[in-house]
Length: 130
Image 1: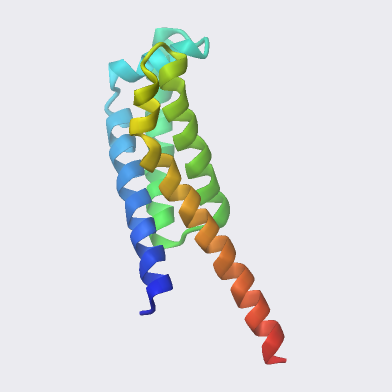
Image 2 (image 1 turned 90 degrees about the horizontal axis):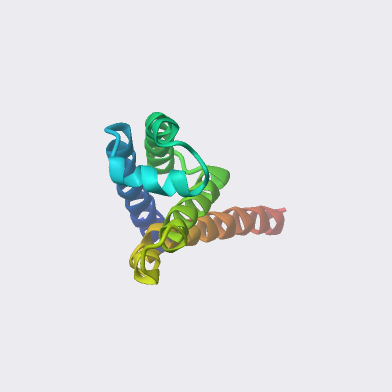
C-alpha cells in the first residue's frame, strides 16, 4: 500500500471515530448539547428529539466514510463538524471551544481534498494511457 493510500485510510479512520463517538453520544441524548440547538431557535424538547436523528446521521456518516468514502458525504462531514464547532462560541462558550475542535473539521476537509485529488489524478492518468 503506497503512502497516499495509507494517509487516506488514516483520515477515513479518524473521521469514523469522530463521527461514531459523537453519534453515539447524540443517540443517547446528551442534554448539554441541546443548548446548541436551542441557540438556533429550537425548543428544548424538539432539540432533544432531534438529537436522535442527528446521532443516527453521524453514525451513518462514520460508517460510509470508513467503508466507501463518498466525496459529498465527506464534504458534509466537514461542513457539519465545522458548524458544530462554531456554534459553541455563538452560544456563549469561549472561542477556545471552537479551536479545541479544529481537528474534528480539518480532518474531513483534508480527506475531501485527498479524495478530490485522487479522482483528478485517476482521470489524468487514464487520459495519458490512451
